[in-house]
Each structure stands twice: as structure tokens, then as C-alpha cells.
Image 1 (cartoon, chains in turn green, orange):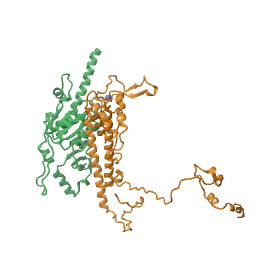
Image 2 (image 1 turned 30 degrees about the vertical axis):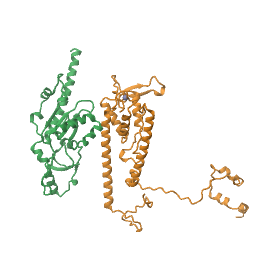
Image 3 (image 1 turned 30 degrees about the horizontal axis):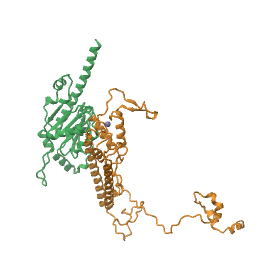
Length: 239
Length: 298
Ligand SMILES: [Zn+2]
């Protein structure tokens, strides 16, 4: 084999590796969005590598991140889980704080204030309730400070491409986490006569909490399999 | 004016419930535990709020300075426009050095020179390698090995100097913890605007100084009225009062008039005019010289 041919092969291999990486991140983010309760078609979530490359490659055969973006609507079940139950004191509770989600992969060697502002403005302009920005590099400290500053308009979450190469919730040592609705939460607290602060905690920065997009004050049920006791559940309050 | 308070002992906690205050004549009642807890909680909430506001200010200042300078030619980094220089200085007031570093990072992402009053793009060295050698043509003390990334933050060495000149003037402590004196920072540029009208510039400077004095005075008055001169005392962390010692004796100037002969035998002990005395010496000095020959009788 000539060295020129060798070079081309090597390049193609590297390109294939990059494409496969992006495909894995794409799969994981779709699974995450679906697991949170947004509506996605099965074939969108379980897309094969070749179909993914076909759909997103540019002229050179490489996947272009510029085309890696999608939105999804919350399912009825998700709306139900986020709904605020009517009480005597508050017969007309506010509507659930969920809405359309927008996911975007960002190209580039750095992500600064301007990128984050552009993203936030895009979300507001299109009435997206939540936005997920996926980058391959670290985001600057100032850019991260924009997220709380625009929190009243839109929710921004950021993920690193690297962290999406595997779906952590599929790991056998990670127990199943299920978000409780507000009704289920108050039922739980009433049954055990607890205040929510008496529950064990899960940090909002915990990888699984980030995966599920948990908010402060929400409670997750954690279901573990035990060899002696079968299945048992525990509960954690997100702080 | 604040009424003078009794100095509080530091070690003894008079407000502790186990040791009730005997002295009922003092009008200050000790706050209950709940009151104190509430006060502490409020105190913390206030600090958090102040911190949040400062951080937002800094963020919007960085965003504004991303697109600086506003004035085009003939102004440049060695001769910025008066308005740009003034806004730049004002916006930097709440900055800590680390916030300033964040500004440079953000400007560099936009490929701008890190010095906010410079409109040029930063340099990008097409050659690889992590380090560069600088100052090979100057004197030996200028010779340095620096990281390439460090050089690529600026358009030139002059701008690097201008930018760092500002960085060292920034206050290390966060703005929400600064006291009155610190909350008024004056930042100088290495290259101030070169005004064509020097007289006008001078007048403006004087005006500014007047303004500065007024505003400092106002701040201090306000702080005094609130009784919160510094963050620490506002927080109740320290309650220290310095009391001037009262001197009753009439002040008198030291003199050399008196006869030196009496001091001759102790003069070699004198330290800058002060004569250290020890107990025995004290005795022998105060006693009559005539007693000297009685010592052996003991
Ligand atoms: Zn420059």
C-alpha cells in the first residue's frame, strides 16, 4: 500500500471516530430528553450510526455540529408530574413549569459570554422553556454567570460532549431514579409524618440529578435491587 | 452623632443567658436568642443580596467592555478617548483581579486585544510550541521565557503592560466586603487620554477631584449615620473602640538646662536620651548619696 493511500485511510479512520463520538452523544442526549418525559419518536432515539452520519454529514463526509439540534414537547404524563395540585388555600394553582425543550451542539474552541447570550436570546425568541447547550470545551466563568441571570426567562443547562459518550443511568451500579410529582411528594411526607428537609439529600450537581434536570425541592424515588430484600425504595430531596 | 458606648469586654459574654446582667441601670437590654438568630439570618441575607448585585454588575460591565473601545481613530490604546477611558475606569470599580482576568479571556474569545481600550486584534502566532523567548535584543534583565498563550492575549507588548498596570490597582477583596475607604477605588491608566486642551483637562480634573471629595464625604457621612463603617463592624464581628488616653499633666518641652554633672556617672547607660532604670538603681538614685557609706553596717 502506498504511503499516500495510508494517509487517506488514517484520515478516514480519524473522521469515523469523530463521527462515532458525536453519534454516541446524540443518542445519549435523546435518551435523556425522552427519560425526562418529552415526546420523541423511537426511531429518533435509536438512530443507527450510518443513518446519523447520513443525516448530518456535510460535503466532506464529516458530521457537522451545526446541524445537530432538535426540539421536543413535554408529554401529558410529564405535564401531570410537574403540575401544581389545587389546594383549599390555592384553588387555582399556576400551570406546570415545563415547556418545549431545545437542544443544540455548539462548535468552536471556546464558549464565552457572546455564545451564551446568543443561545439565551434564541431560546427567548422562540419561546423555548428549556435549553440544553452541549459543548466540547469548557464554558468560561462569565458565560456560566449568564445562566442564573436569565433564569426568569428561560432555563439553560449545559453539558460536556465528553460526559454524554455513555449514558450513566444505564450503568448497572446506578439505581433507577424516578421523579415524584408534587402530589406524590406530599403523600409521601404525610405517610411518614416528615418534613421534606428530613429526607436524605441529592445535590443538584449530582450526575443523575443533572441527567433528570432535577430542581431544588423535588423528591426522587430511588429503586435498588437487593439480593436479600428484592427491590427496595428510598427517597431523596434535591437541594 | 452617635452617643458614646461603654467599651465591652471581649472575653466575657455579658449577653449569655447563664450570667444575667446585674447592672440594670444600663438601658441596653440584651437581645433574646431568637432576636439574635433573626438578626444573623437577616445579616446573611443582606450579604448574599449585595453579592448577587455586585456579580451582576460585574457581568454586565464585562459584556459592555467586550466591544470597547467605542471611539475610532485617531484614538488608540496609547491615546484613548476621554469618554472611553472614564467609562472604563468606572466599570472596573467593583472588579477583583480575577474578574479582570475573565474580561481578558472573553475579549480574547472575540479575537480582540485583551486591553479593553485597544481596538486591535490580538496576535496569533502561527508557529507551534508552548514557549517563546522575548527580550533578546534588550538588556539582560529583559530576557524572559514566557508561555505562548500569555503573549497571544495582546496585540503588542505595550498593551500587555497597559493591561497589567491596571490589574495591580484592583482591590483583592470582593466589592461586597469592602469598607468605605476601599469602595472608592481610583484607577489610573498607563496611557491616559492626551487632551489637546490642557487647561480644559486640568479644570476637568479639579472638578473631578471636587466630586470625588464630595462623594467620599457623603459616603462616610452616610456610613457614620448608619453606624456601619466597615463590613466587619456592620456584621458585629468586632466591636473595638479606641479610647484616647487622658493626659492631665501640663505638657512641657524637654530641656538641657539642668546640670549635667549629676548624670555623668549614668550617662553611658542612656539610650537616645532615655535612662533605663532597674529596681536597685532606682533605690540608690532616690536615696541620699550620704547613705552610701552605711551599706557595710548591715
Ligand atoms: Zn492592544
